[in-house]
Length: 586
Image (cartoon, rainbow, N blue to C red; front, side, top):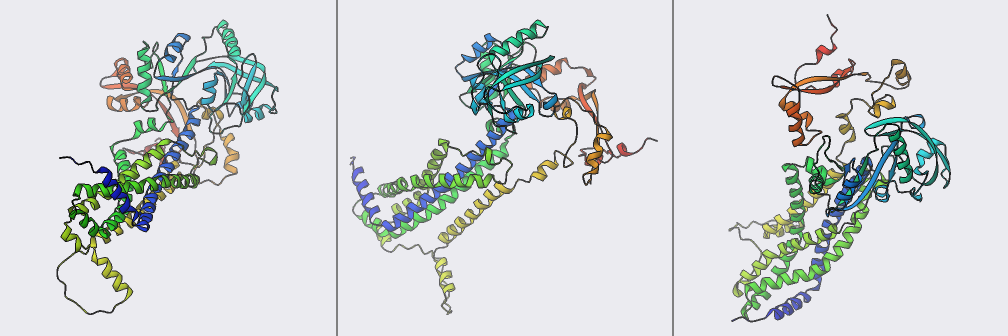
């Protein structure tokens, strides 16, 4: 026989809850503080992630998920219509500025549509994007280098070389009308000179008449998710009937490595995943212990009342439901309060957290992701339900007779009585010894809170920039010509370096000498390690099948460099001995 008494149980749960308002206030505060912990933690982590992504995107030059490189109009039409593609942007580079004022900070002359402009952080803060004729937009530093005052309608004379990433032509000088500009961003690697599509097409036609190929157009795309970008782009290309790869005739793709999902896919291993799981388990367990203690005290205080309920027919299952419903009622008040307070605390903590980083306040981003609130609420609710599970079992398992004489004191056997002086310390010690389990839980709760604080402090301040840079450079700075930093080779003489030597205190100094590319023959294992940095697995196998061989070894071009004797000791030697490099020839 089934009796529908859920309504009665709910009323009983509510009235029991209302009978202990002070205890309820403590429980609500505890739940709110636990939720605050989750919310502030999620806010800080997601905000740091978005700030890092924003920082990386500017280094990449766009926050588009990826791109299809060197596509024609037919391919653009087919790829743009694919259901996995949410938005597209076109860009066509027509020239490079690498001389004169832009010898050190080179620039690119290109057409970008509205989407590409917005995704590339080059949306004019004043004015608009070029629409027709010889209209142009650029950043404020480029204007300063050209000696032009930022004014709408100003005339800008610009000299550039006809070029894209695959061909070079002659120099062109044109005068443009300035229709917009934006503040210079030092993270963007180049100066972007954006022109109208009409002008770009005219220059392309002129270049083709002079024997150049059509300038390449890249199609930037936004997908529904940043997860698995490379495979998604590959599937899109294949669905449209194209072979995707890096060989001639294949559709080439580019993946935005600035996205955290892309970086994790390349670097995250089993150890990293286990570390993330361990931290989340630690945070959850900390909240569990705090809330569990509150419900344990509540049940212990009402155990006689629960015993009386059992005498009138309330089942253990119904008692557990009463406690669970009380927990949900308290959560309905505590969790929303904790979400609001936690987000406020996280928002204030993010700038402080990032103040020791190299991001700077300009790039700090406070995340507004709904996952902050959904995740924190879910973790808090799960923690509350876990915390009230055991107290509910205790209330349901105690018989009415046992409930009358229930006590939390743990009997540990007879002990001899000894007379001792009654002091506050002795009373505190005796009280802690009454319930060793509860004492242990409280100590663990306090310890875990300290552990979490230590983890957060280590996470924020544990990055040593000097140690990080020591693995990438053996000196405080490198001096060379602009060509070296633009990967176009370099030439530097002792005469060039003399002013630097005369005006700096040096503990280390030396030259490196480039000798060009030489062909080496490597065992297949080492050959694959080198090539896989630049190609996907299937392309490596294709290249291997056509590579030149010398027995079991495979040919590979490598850059050979010479080092001064002062730099030789800075080499990290994996095997062998480099001392013969510093010894004179006999």
